[in-house]
Structure formats: structure tokens, C-alpha cells
Amino acid sequence: MRYAPSASNRQNWRYTVITDKKEINKLSKETSNFFRVARKLLPLRFLVVPFLGASERRRVLDPSTKIQLDSSLESMNEGEDIIFFDAPCVIILYARKYTKNLAANDAGVALTHGMLAAQALGLGTCWIGFAQRKLNGSRKLKKHYNIPKGFDVLGVITVGQPAMEYRRAPPRRKLKVHWIE
Ligand SMILES: Cc1cc2nc3c(=O)[nH]c(=O)nc-3n(C[C@H](O)[C@H](O)[C@H](O)COP(=O)(O)O)c2cc1C
Image (cartoon, rainbow, N blue to C red; front, side):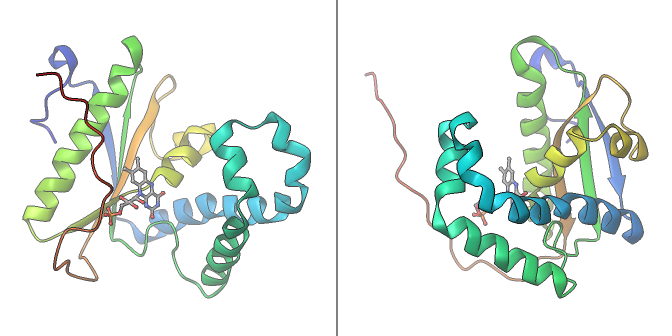
């Protein structure tokens, strides 16, 4: 990740690496509270729908959302770590924002370098947007994980031993490409 390219070679990023199981559990618990709150609020969704953007509106009105939330809550109640999947290492990337969101681009490049390098070493990774969102919304948690004032969390990934091996690339939609030749 250190050698990843960045806009103007700013290398604007900083990291917190957590390997303390207690600390990973703490962040997981704090983050997964979102699922409890979301499930509680779901019956009231018709009241908030007019204030939501198109994609969020689609999500709260989709009947599968309730099924997914119930299934996540059930797993949580059985003690599963539905946020970090029991990974032994969580990496948080944070940076000061600068021009036109380039810091977020740099973060994506740096973490993806790490994800590909980990894969080459036989490790597995997963980007955890839920934790990223939770951290950015909590001054207290940011402080707890050593993220200074004025810095945004621009990525969180887990690193661990993959539980399964892929035999082929997972399916993806066809690329939408506009060729100008
Ligand atoms: C920005 C970003 C945020 C993500 N957030 C989460 C997350 O919070 N929890 C999770 O389990 N997976 C998360 N993922 C993983 C995606 O769900 C996953 O990459 C996608 O479904 C494709 O699956 P694959 O990588 O196994 O092919 C995230 C991926 C990205 C790129």
C-alpha cells in the first residue's frame, strides 16, 4: 500500500491496524447496532420514504430488506461477527480530504493494492463499508481508534485466512463500455 500511486504523489493516507481481538469486537458490536436500529425503524419506513434518495428508497421498500435484516440479527444473536467475520486484523485508512474527493480515490487505490497483495500471499480481505460509515459518524470511536480531528475514514478492510477457495472468478455483469474509435 505504501507504493500505491496517489494524486500529486501526496501519500496523504494514515492507518490504524487493529489485531487486538477485544478492540475488533468492540468496533464490530458498535457497527452492528445499526442493524438493530434499522430493524426497529423498518415498520416506520413509509414516514421517511419521501425524504430519501432514490436508491435508499428502493432499498427500504424492497421486501427482501426485512428478510436480510432478520437473518443478520439472528446471526448476531447466535454470536456471529457479521461485520468482520472473525478476521484477526482490521485496517482503517484515514486522511484529510482534499480537492474534489481525490483523497477517496487515493484511498481506494491504496487499499486495493493491499487487497491484491494479500491475495497473492494467500490471505483474504474484505472492504467493510459498514465500519467505515460507523466510524465517520462517531467522534468518540474515531478518537478511540486514534483518528485525529479533521481526518475522514476513507476505507476499512479485514485481513485474514480465507475460509474458502474460489475455483473461478465470481460472476459479474457485462461491462458497459462506450468505444470511441
Ligand atoms: C466500498 C466497498 C464496501 C463494502 N462493504 C462491505 C461491508 O460492509 N460488508 C461486507 O460484508 N462486504 C462489503 N463489501 C464487499 C462487497 O459486498 C463484495 O466485494 C461484493 O459483493 C462482490 O463480492 P466478491 O468480492 O466476493 O466478488 C464492500 C465492498 C466495497 C468495494
